[in-house]
Image (cartoon, rainbow, N blue to C red; front, side):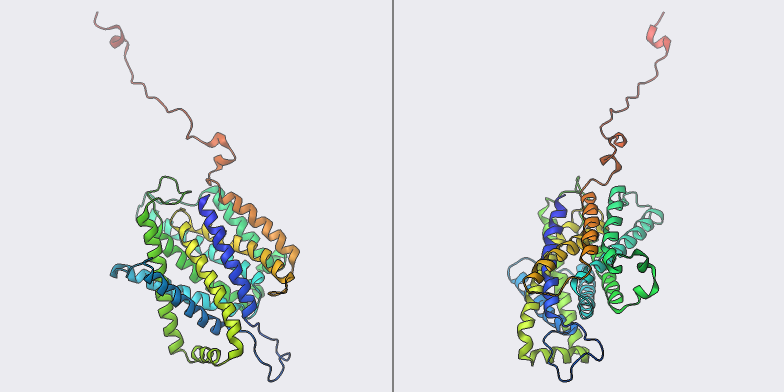
Length: 376
């Protein structure tokens, strides 16, 4: 249950960051509606990524100066480099999606990362069990599987505006925002699986509590800051090499009218990184990353909906469409979250299936009659 609290607080940070994205990223104007010579007051996806690069770099410097991490060893570099590159590209694609849709429409799409993680984990467990004869492979438990499915269902419901059948049409999945989010979340899923495999402590007797091993927690911090370091390095390389990215960054620097908007985006990026720090803890303490990932998406979606409605009433952010559908969706997600906080076994609802409290079977050795009677 404790891991879910960390996910909850992480998604609060992310929901606030999404609101900042809504306020700072300019949505595309339909063709024919844009006024000639109109001044842009919002950032593009590339410019938002540049602001994120600056904030990430500042976070990395603070992390090393404060002693939260050390220079990684050579054998740790491949994983850290891969995670950094994956997360930078994933976040860039997500920011591009904000050019076409609001956060309350995008956050349900973030559930696709949980589907990707689930498929990757199933394939990995089957390979380990069948081909490598690993006897310690643990598949997802029944109630956690049900929780996963409910969170995914609740997450996808707003995408089709309450019409489930629309989700099974080709046109729905071919839209630009859906393609951007699905690709982004595939990269996030790969990052999550690597993070889990690098930080999960299989020696804990109870996977519902946090590791008490200080070295494990230190390694999680080291892994996270190391991956942020390579995300910043890869981002800097990206902006230096790609001409369109470089022009976007130069336009942001040369436009004083965008600096205030960039500050709002920087605050959102700071909140997003804070959420990533908190969210790294559950991956080191819970056995199934697909459930963690689904809980992240479900809680972020619910928190984002609540904050978006409240802040819009205060004159901040974008309006919330299809509110009734999104409230029903949030209810389904909450049921799934409650199930994810259980042990995951069917005995939670059916105690008769629990064999852990049954008396042990005593094997009495066979004694013949002659042995009982003794010698004549």
